[in-house]
Length: 353
Image (cartoon, rainbow, N blue to C red; front, side, top):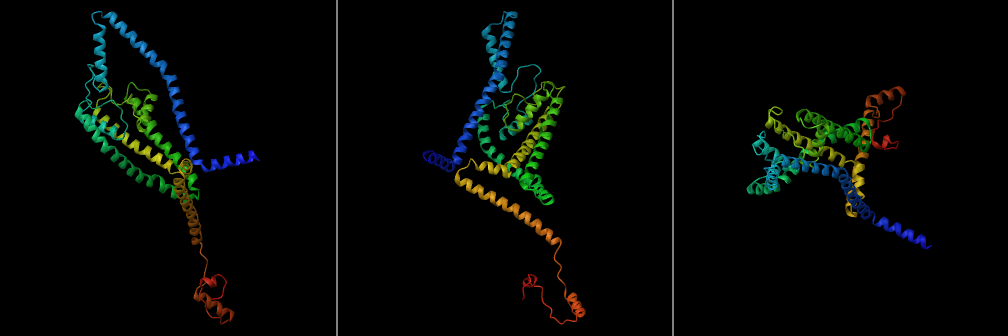
């Protein structure tokens, strides 16, 4: 008896706090995902970091051994200064004549800032530039998000909502299953056009990149992660890049178009009924009720579409109602003088008027 009561109380508690428990599991799972990712990255990258550090130290010892007139302190000071300047996009190499703050490079910088990609390869040098970057981003990032949202919604009506409605009426398939197929197809096309093909193009244009590095750059950029370890157009040879400004401008256009298409795919997946039902598991009760009402509205819309299809089928083959001339001819043939009656709703149902 006690065990039955305890079990019933536990079931009632779980049912009453289902969304809170689901949210707690979501938090634990996300923290666990972060910890596992950190452990894997540490295990993979730490040996490479140690090996690179040892290699640099060996090169430094060889340089000092072959150039005994250079002191350790002066060389360390020069290297520190050069690395600091490199972090600001300035190099002291003889073959580096590219400027980081001409108009096209500045346009590329503003696009990466406003889309929150932020490669970090070029940063403001002056205090005035840093102050302007704060106010420019403070206004520009919300405007950019609003702009992208408006563009994505307009594209969604063309590439998602209209095709789903058309194929739903044409094939009489469930919108939920049709939406999954459409989202998978849209994701495949976007990956092919904005990730796979551009990666091959970058391999041909960037002499130091292999396919994995180019694919890595496309993914990091279009997901707005923007680590900045790979930035196209940073080659220091004019022979390999004869039109650096045009190349940088084309990359800016590619990043903006690719970001819009990625957002369209994400929004398409986000609007799937399966995703909406899954999100309800982690909402509070009030929000769950609102979302359940939305789901019911969607279900009723699907049902109304099916009824409309049935009604269209019935309209294509309407019931035949005899005209006045046909009834008169029938009366003359049968020799009857029954009065003509209107085909009202009650008469059609077999009831006398």
